[in-house]
Image (cartoon, rainbow, N blue to C red):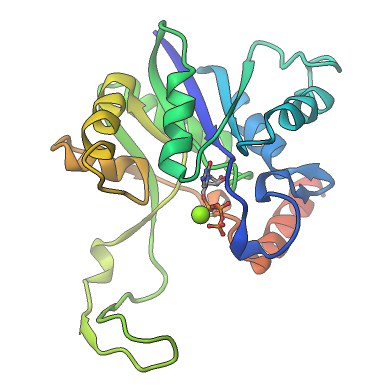
Length: 245
Ligand code: CTP
Ligand code: MG
């Protein structure tokens, strides 16, 4: 009964602005992806990490990981007790996740899907997701209550005022993070039925929900935020500096 982590890292990071693919951008002098791999490898439950690299960047990513071993690993590629595979990704996040799932060996029974763009997730959050899956939940997402009130609108043209359709009760809303944890068969079934139907989903659990399986939420962590825009990088640098202080 083995747990693996798949890290989709194949996005370009358009919203972060021009530069290298987002996962390869430096955070505290170390590529964001390396932080994300270390965050997964820190969990004792995770024995394999599959990194999904930009479609033309798998070789570069392999070198990068070999240059940045886990603390306790040895230079030249040892990540201690954690194996790290690198596979090329696809055009969409969903395709990239699928490429990672396809690379898993047969003895893997549960999987974490973790965005490279959430490099600072604490190991306690990873462990609580793993624990909930091992306790029998087929799909688990870490999430936090919202600070902002959320409105549903009728999307209009850019710059035009948009009519509000409603205000969901904030206390019932959660902002979801990663790693999201799954019984592997449940997630593969969702990919086979939902992706093939041409429907998309903005997270992995969303696909599983559509197959009728109940997804559960465990507490997320404020440091598991996603680096999306330039201001997020400023926050990530500050969090890292605070940890090192
Ligand atoms: N991702 C991926 N393959 C894609 C698109 C996204 O593996 N074709 C990954 C990203 O690398 C990231 C995660 O999915 O780790 C979450 O996506 P997001 O934050 O949207 O990253 P990007 O797609 O890179 O950013 P943007 O949407 O601003 O271009
Ligand atoms: Mg994206």
